[in-house]
Image (cartoon, rainbow, N blue to C red):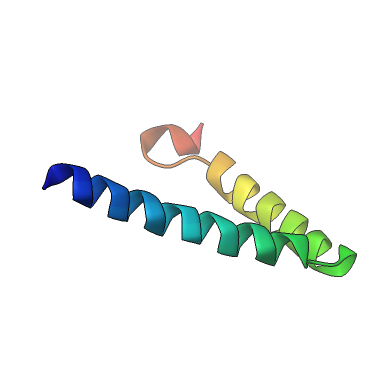
Length: 56
């Protein structure tokens, strides 16, 4: 029974991977620029720091 669940989970992950790769393959230069800008914003936000050390 556990083997069947593993095969089903593998099939779902394989399908999800193909959907994501197809989406990424169809992205144009402007969409990649937006992704880059969003990643930079998220990275800068994460580098701010949280907690007691963020005030140093």
